[in-house]
Amino acid sequence: MEIIGNLLLYASFILLIGYFTLSFFMLKEQGTVTLPLWLLKAAVVAIPLSLLLTVIRLVYMLYSQFQVEFFEAVFTVLLQYAAGQAFLFASVFAWMLLSMIPLSRSRKTSAFALLLLLVLIITVSWAGHGAAVAGITGLIGNSLHLAGVAVWIGPLTILAWAAKDGLPGEFFRWFSPLAVFAVVIVTLSGFLLMNDIVPQYVQAWQITYGQLLLLKHLIYAPLLLFGLHHFWLGRRKPEQLDGSGVIGSFRLESLLAYFILAISAFMTEQTPPHEVAQTLQTESIVSVMFLYLSEQQLQTGMIGFAPSVTVILILAGATAIAATAFLLLRRNKFQLAFSLFLLSILVGYHGVMSSLTVQEELLMDQTVYPTIESAVSQTYENDDVIEVAVAQQVEDEWHVVYTVNGEQLVAEKLQQAEGGFKRLPAAMLTVGGTAVVEEEQKIRTFRVESGNWHDEEYAATYVTFGMIQQPENVARVQIHYEGGSFIAPLENQVFLHVTSSNETWQEEHPIDFLADDGTVMETYARNVMERGIYCH
Image 1 (cartoon, helix red, strand yellow):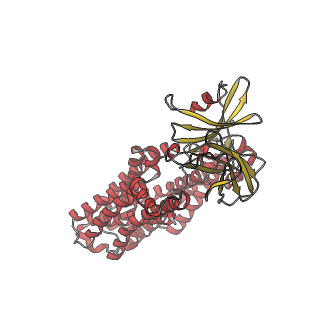
Image 2 (image 1 turned 60 degrees about the vertical axis):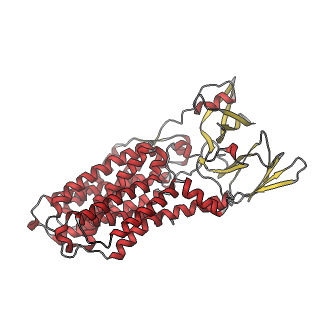
Image 3 (image 1 turned 90 degrees about the vertical axis):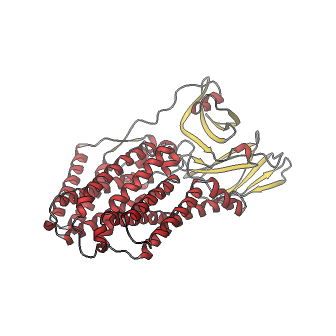
């Protein structure tokens, strides 16, 4: 549902920015493009409504999974979560924008509406992945990216589907330089966001987010060729232009743009792979990878980009197809050109994926640390306080649970070595959010399908760990998975249990708190299993 909300959000910004941009620059040609008031108002209302979907999900999560009272959950999300705060601000700005739509059009009104839309974009970006991962840099990058796309595609989309009398004569005079500026902004901000969110671009192709990003970039290339074609048209005299032909070309460009927006809407609900090796602990490798590399290859190392002669020929073929499509585009053969552009994307994708090779295995830290504390502390700053609560030896490995500054609860695997312990790559599961020492109970279960926590003889490994401060005197816990019940003792108010199965168990797994005599003191309801390496 949130994916549909995201797509509606992007479409609303494109429609509104396109409309008010045209109103600002085409004051003398107001009759060329008209949109019904109800559509403009619906687009404005859709902006806060799309944010409301995320608010509802967060409230439901707090209410159902963390047993937070309903109204407390509502106020917590609205006042403390970025998504809730963004919804409140967006509602205010949307109301202001809504009140302006019935007013008569003027440059001053359109300029103020565009300013409000920019503020709304910043508000929405505040709750996005970019801001969450990279702070102010991500906020700026995401805002510029969305604003650039809307300025570029918005006017073009409005004219493509709502122009009454063909193309306005003065359109290209102002739109061409504006579109070039917007394309530069979109491209630069895209690189800025990638650097923060997906620094391991090629490695990320192993998971869904990376595959979608690759597909998005492959579609972006023919979209740029459409833009180049329209820039070339803009250099011609108005009387030399075929108005219906240009409108048809605009429609195809807008369709390509909406393909990209649909992918972006889906990506928003995926976990960005900032560290791919760690993400692969709990997220399966995307199925399409097995068409190009074997399962054994993908399990033994990380992938690299090394095109062979055959691959270079495939990519050259994709380029030739795209070039042919561009020539057909200039001759107004729009449907054939569009089909060839899609073919070039598929051929280019096959070429890129065929170039993948397996690099060396993940480098393991060969340092032998004298104590468990010194080994696990390597990830953190010198002044961070690490307190080990549980350390269980399982053959030649150690399963360790520790707290970081009393806030995070972390489960990590170490390898037994002569004279101490070695750290394993991508072997950490972290529970963050509210400080663990401030909660009566904090328990999470991770379903791991690849990586160091995963037992390769089974389809999935279930890692459950947590801290129980209330009730007091809990001696052990009994975890009731769909596949069986298991008991784990408490040490320093912390427990850890690891089990594996070839079955995908239901996510509901209540946990009984047991006294020394086996009496059930309390039952902790868990209705979800974590997929990532980090959770709240």
